[in-house]
Length: 102
Image 1 (spheres, rainbow, N blue to C red):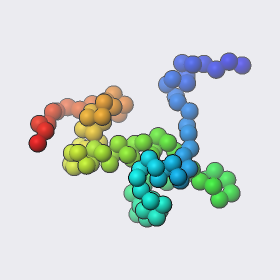
Image 2 (image 1 turned 180 degrees about the vertical axis):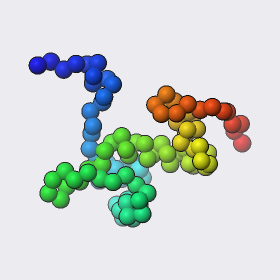
Image 3 (image 1 turned 90 degrees about the horizontal axis):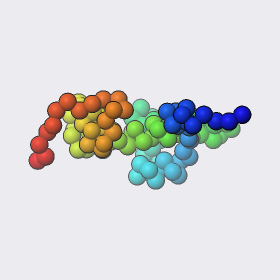
Image 4 (image 1 turned 45 degrees about the horizontal axis):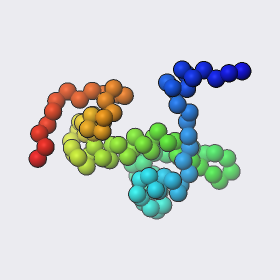
């Protein structure tokens, strides 16, 4: 059975990240990650079996992009502007206005 490369391009495989990689990608400590989880401000991990958990890579990447957008733009449309600023338009939203850099 051969794989269809067209399907793989449109649906990249889901990858799980373990805690050390999540810490490295986010810059957060273990305790901060778990505090934010308890507050509902961080993506929830997925049970992998036994006591092992992993985070979905795409959710962590999205969380990082949102933090960047909040830092740069700080308003309700931060996600949209952040995606535009990071060259990620077309994934969910399109930026509709340009703001001058201050």
